[in-house]
Length: 301
Image (tube, rainbow, N blue to C red; front, side, top):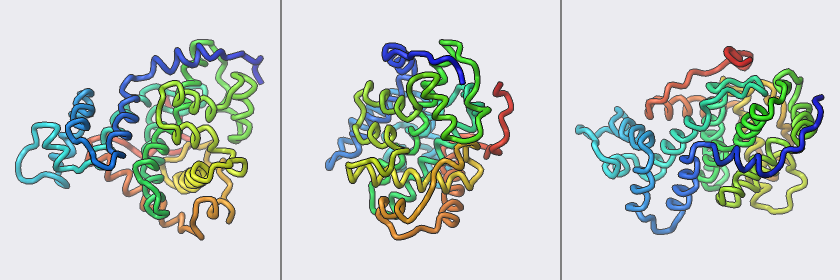
């Protein structure tokens, strides 16, 4: 293990502040489309703030799945064709692609693998939320951003010249111990810190921050979402979108299903559903996402 580094909150805030500003767009859109009476003009203004979001939405609207025999040329036209939730999905996917541009060298996780896992987790959480009568928008967002703490720790480790180490450890518990000893925090705690720093919806920080403490969560809503995150990570680990060392990190039991509010789920079948849905979403939005073999860390030193 490395000599402990006392990571000060100001360093974390600085690292969070240097993340793409468009990440805050996810929370703004989430709040907007969660309103009982959605202000479409407000949603359009938010989506128009990011040219990458606008471009990808127009591409999806003009895809074979959504085209209406003419070319969509404006964001309001694209939103009308796609529908609010699908537009939200593609907007968040676009922002996630901007967030996952850097290799996580400290974990030996390539940028491609990180993005693939984030999108698959988002789709998986959405699928399971529908299975359990929870809000799919909330599930999609939690899944998409659950790796945020790792991204911030990568930036901190690079600035502090922390030796690479986590990627060589055998399992997630040892990795998290390394995080604790090296930085004083785990990636889950860092993720919660960043959400709170940005003033994002509290459900995100609570679930992300406590995602590995299922039996210690007292808030029923947070515990249910955390259990769903466990189930999603388990099924994603059986696809081409797993993160290697984290694949054995989510023990599943009858208690887990109970916390999620379901008797049981066919995770093998759902993994196939998630794989297909992830591929479809990326193809429709024009995002090239090649499944990454869990042992492939090419370009990640």
